[in-house]
Length: 68
Image 1 (tube, one colour):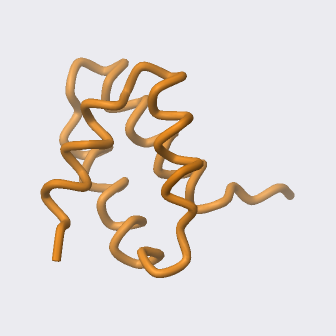
Image 2 (spheres, rainbow, N blue to C red; image 1 turned 90 degrees about the vertical axis):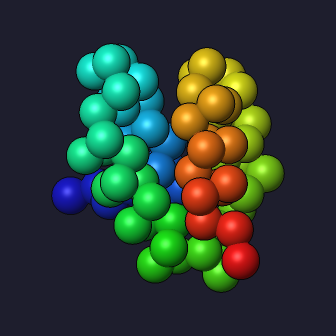
């Protein structure tokens, strides 16, 4: 069994949110992973892939809603 990294899980959830027309459930799931793993996430990796996957606006929203 292969497990996804927290970064890839966040990206997948944001992509699913985008593809489903704005699913808040998927977005909230991504937020939860972010909140639990915040201290160990590779934010540059997520940012680069968010651009590649064309979900940067959702990633930026997640960051904005979870700033300290």
